Image 1 (cartoon, rainbow, N blue to C red):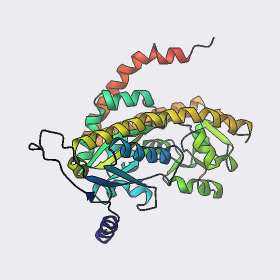
Image 2: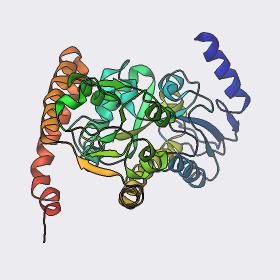
Image 3: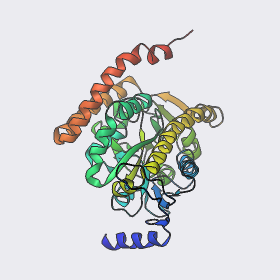
Image 4: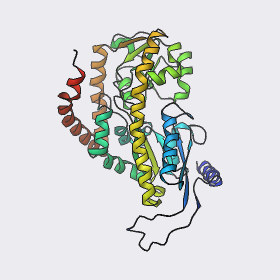
Length: 368
């Protein structure tokens, strides 16, 4: 592991990943209390769990890099590297934590094995939707808890997108009852995977690049991914015709941006604000882009590819809901930080649900 870390560090130094390119500081006496505006140029590296130029997610990161470059007057350049170009997809957390790269774009449930509390900052099964979870993170205390969770790992996190409620997944065969999922191998990560296992299925974790092949060859019987737009691009309809909803496992999954905490705090304050504002812009743009594309591609799947779109049965959803409560309870009983975060999450959810029942939910249910 040390040899790998040394290799990465030397490689990145060679392309300017860990060092500033040039500097010419202005003469400011009190650098502790005054934002230091300098001519110093920085080049940072970002790795991701997404394939290079991946639709929406990869595209958005390229846009982010450009926004930061423009807003900083060229002082900050972020070089985006897709999964596998520099760092394997599921090694982002360690790479940023150790300082091999500066930033990573991912989803926090991938790190649930080493940081159980991280999963609360992705999506809880049957939890809050995108609008609600954004409100919790940004306005309801979630950000502070997220920072507390990641600080021991030398990371600084921010919300950098949301897919909105996802689809329930692609299945090679029709499923109608809980008996139909017994032993069924499904690619499903995070807490949703634990729920699936409790309900009798077999949860499999694998990166997106392997999903089509695994589904085609029968290595897995089903897979969830994101929603109609990305699922269409992945071509799942060619090997599985049963497309279920809703995405009970990820009703509002947060996409995270993590920065190496030491390197983040060493940046001039104006560059910190420029990057943060660009990430919040990305957070909004990503959800909007998913909403704009998913309806169009749902029609393509149904009308052009003959996909059968259907809801999970009440029996299946009820069972998954009960198992979800068990999974959350077990998680919070074992980990004090999980308990603390879950209390904040559930209290916020309870309060915001009372409002949404007479606002968003009622409005969406109008049928005239």
